[in-house]
Length: 525
Image 1 (cartoon, helix red, strand yellow):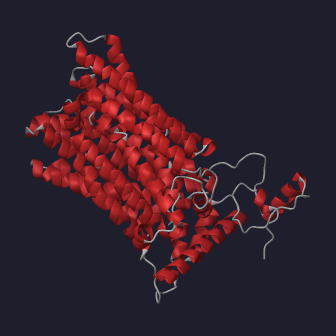
Image 2 (spheres, rainbow, N blue to C red; image 1 turned 120 degrees about the horizontal axis):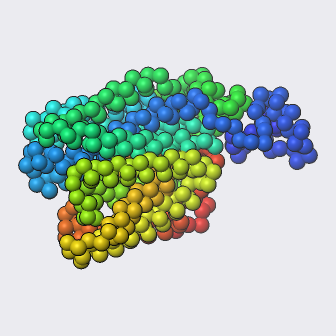
């Protein structure tokens, strides 16, 4: 058996069963041993693995589709309302139905990815969204437009679950935070592209401009489907299917050296064997051959007979996804023209221009967060983001309330305050909840539960997003925009407390080590 005494000084965390270092080993001896083992031991952390980065970028590109829809609908809905003569309630249904219907894709994606693999599930997501985009762009009536939104929503649901899970399973531990946050980076890029599309096509006649805005989403969907063909399959899915040589090949290419790849493979095989023994224990007579397993019994283990660690994991994953959408971020972006109108900005061009500024701010801060997520950890970024959002939403609520009582004589400083508060809200979201939700919920589930557990958590995400976006305007009309933002600020205070009490830090841990973090935590569940 290979001696690992010097390998552990490499930057990949060893499993608990790995050999411990000799305390008498000097640093020079360790470096010499690492060199003999093929390790890249040095005093600085290794850079990003290019193969893992390429796979993460290709998978995360799928998230542009959701981001583009969020951004483009903020402007397209204005022109659809004028062209089709629909009411504000119909606008809410049109905007929100994509999020509600993405619940279907999120629930189905876990089982699908366990069956056909992570890579081909990404193709399913892109193809489904492509069909929806074509239907929306060519829709002759409101019902057909709704049908296109429903189909596109299912594709979005698939995409939101599978992209972070695939990237988390492909990535080395010490760069997993950055790589798994890339889907949120691409969502932000998609939102910005949607805003730019609104601005570019707004000069066309009202019966054409919104069709162009929605229809061009078909092009990135095609690009994503073709790009997936160059991606490797998830090594963890390959191990579950008993395809160990293929898994080893992928791990060698996504690791710093062969020794690290073998250690990762050993951990994954150990986790897969534990999963197999649990499945066989729960269901007598089932086949022990990993290749025959397609995700059977996972829902029972998650919802009916969860162990205490699994229950804690489920609470953490569902909680972080719930608060991500209960923050109202999607609704603020979808209805940003309405929000900025309330803030005193008039004219469609000006409204779209301000939303572009907001999109740039959001994209810049999500990039900053992605770069520092592996350095500072998940908890600090979540706490900073949710706390900052709470303050920003309270300031925005105060500003909107002052504008409401000022009548037609709106003070310029209050308008500026509201615009800055909106940009600060989406920026703090991009620092914390935006990227960290996808990272955290995709990495904390054990291998046997990861796909379907993530799909359940993201289904809650999409359901809450749909409810918030379909009621945002109606509730704001009932309690005023100021009251709505005060309410959302209170929600973010609760979110900050939840993150502090229920979410352990996962930075630097391998996926196989994370489950133990939830076993002995002295928390509230």
